[in-house]
Length: 304
Image: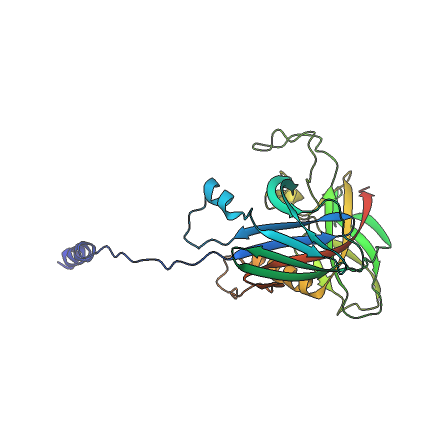
């Protein structure tokens, strides 16, 4: 009798279900800027529009996210340049960008970015600090792994509080063999299509101001194009025989804060214990975004 009662109760609960319809709140798109000034490289500005959480995400909506009719100006403290719109390769992908190829970033200069679009005005500032070069670089195998390891560097921080850094690395050699599908055609292709920054790539000098020390950094991953060695035993490691272009940059405290918050958000994404919050953007006005300023130096290392 009890079993029959339970069955009837369950049937009753399901029979009482009612479809509820409700309207999701709509939000107006916000302009989002990602801009970079770097020594010896033309400026680059990408402008998109934010999307609602429940908005469709497909090829059409992705194309419509990009803003292609803004007026963009870059001031270097002396001259005011209007940036041109073009389709350019960014991290290996053709994307709509604003740039001006007749100028490149210069050490020590302060830059002001102004963007105008449909009555909205956005302003951001960035500086290209003088970079601090690494004294030496070397490859060191990790514990019992004979062919896999990290890149080590010797570095001396100036005795001035407030220096901020970020490191990148790009394997510029090619794969010498194929992996299991879907990576069964990578032989002969370059391992990394751009310099990659691992999690924890950005730091200030509060803990090592004025010190000389050795440190190691792992290999970063390209979130837009996962490689055959981004999982399994080779994940985060460089490999003996790799030729690595190491990019060492000096940057500013606002950029350091943004990168640190972005990396923390990436690590804790999906965690119920993560704390929601806005990223510390340095774009002001009718939108959000980040204006990076990098003073960069480059070294090449063969992992032996």
